[in-house]
Image (cartoon, rainbow, N blue to C red; front, side, top):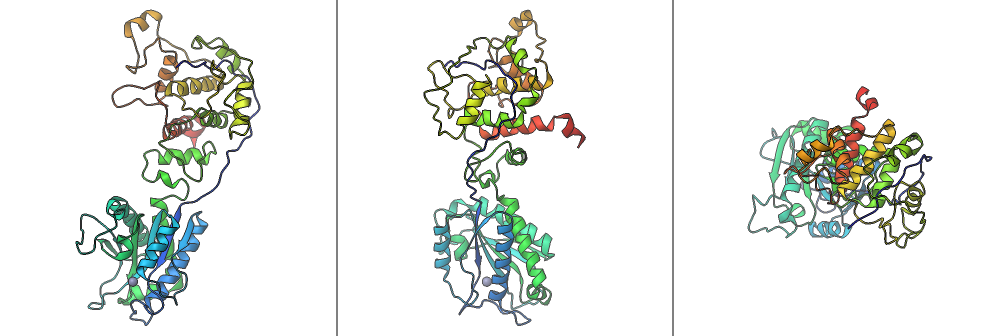
Length: 430
Ligand SMILES: [Zn+2]
């Protein structure tokens, strides 16, 4: 498949545009343990578990809402009884991301036992008479990570003793279909812990600790980045308003489209600061088969497309061309080679010069390629790929290839942009 390359760049005012955003935050189910006819454990100081659980749960809800999460409570009223089955059914119906049940512990045979612990389902420790749901039996690694994160942050915030993680077949952590934990905040049978649980401020601190643990495991924005290698880079670039998700999902492993890439570039590079790019690119020998077209309309570019205005602007400015069949293919994946060329040209425009290629034609013939075995010198994108590699903005595959014809994922472009920002002189001084 042959596409027309960029033709010219011209000076332009910064483009104002917005993607449609429907904020749908990560959704957390909070389940306050016990209630109604089942008050749970009774503290040495007379306080009942269900009272403590509901208060911490409500404080946790407020904390999570403040941090941008969506919250579903299995129940809000400590006076109401709710079966374990109903709690799990309500959780499933909520189509949430995480389930957190809030309890307080009791160990009647010794008042010395104190601290926080977390129950979670672990298929390394199955209880044969209490089989887990099919979904939960695959979620052990996530259950464990969530449990550890909440435990670490709870103990750090509340100052309780760390009693560790406990594999458990408790119904609410065993029968659901999302990562689930049961938090045992502290022991009502220990005087010190019971004092904490009876104290409004200490309960607030516990809620903050649990919220910290949830947030460290699953950020309220782009929850589909949990555990992803590019998470930090994506969040940094997001903070610069360069990238956005859809319905609060980033879809890091989806291929980057042409419309998405041009939109990102318009945010990274201030077009009004590119005075020399038009002349430098016109003279560039890398534009081997560019064919300028005056066509302003494209068969596949509807005015209702979310990127219609940015794409039209990019065409008007000569940043992109359409294909020979009069299509623009805004939703088609852009190749890694095309990304390198366009990115390189924007950078050279910012610097006011084209990247120098120090390799003589004789040496090119002799070497065949410089860094990547699948990027020979004759490849139209070779100079830009090699240049970006020298600047440590792009990486190859483990086998020493760049895969210039393959699509670039949305995670990969975020990493490239993040590296670009990290290498700006103004960034280094900070
Ligand atoms: Zn309980």
